Image (cartoon, rainbow, N blue to C red):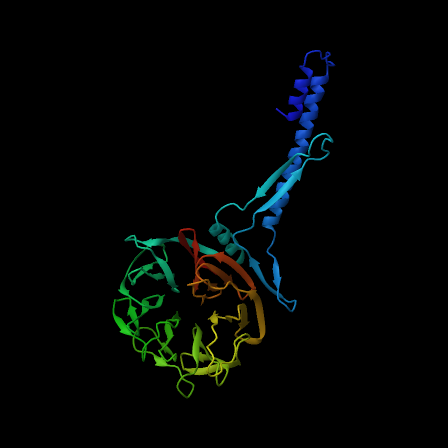
Length: 405
């Protein structure tokens, strides 16, 4: 019963009270009903405002120069708390209030899926489990252009999940690093060499003079690219025979930083101070540019700058000085800057991967998915990997693998 009704009932029921007017009870109930309707309307209006805040379009971030930098869609969405006050409160009692907390429905992974669908077309999605079929922990390390998900178990054995999803099965080899996959091939770094296995189970060594286990390995267009222990880039045309060291007329064309078939992107920061696009079909330099913005020239005795890069079919995307930037292959002067990226925490290692259209930057605990075509950047907790038309992201205790275009 409403507090007003309680108080009136007590007063009217006291000894000595006079008889109330015949219509007093009706007037009391009508007044209480009106006040309750007004209060309910105020609460609903506040809840509607909170919901409007949550579903509003993402905020356009701007860089220091005032140009639109990117659209960052936060995840998880914020929780908004609104206090509603009923109209015309009684002067004899405090204004009634109610706190309305509007939270997004579903888990953060579901919110990411919704935001992803607003950015690209998702034509299929499956779940990838976080444990192998044998029950061992499974963390994805690489995503292939055929949708294969590769990772290492705690014992160093490689495990893989097909594009149809499910639990990872034994891949049939052990590896240090350098995992990669494409239709009909699997590749990995083992014993200081880059191995490659064809669909018939035959294994070959494709690194011409060893493989650096700390350097990235890329698989795209049927080609495999990596670096030797001297950080000289090499490229192999599939599993059939050893690859060739990339040169531009002399040993070492710089350090390989990204690969999108047919171009291997190499950087020489000390002497030439150039970024080159090497056509891996001919090993000829197809284009040459100054060092990307934020990448410093290297001086003798100074530590090498740590920065990251990836390339799609149409764009080169990099993170240097903590800032995400991109440029199209055919217009190197039109550079976009998209704000700061999450920094890796203790024990984390940042990396970038790229697919046909999207690029992912991840520290392992938080990731950004960037679309160079639109400049839109989505933020997601956990690991995100991209390759070909596929995107893998962490959702709770498992992963989601989606085909996008």
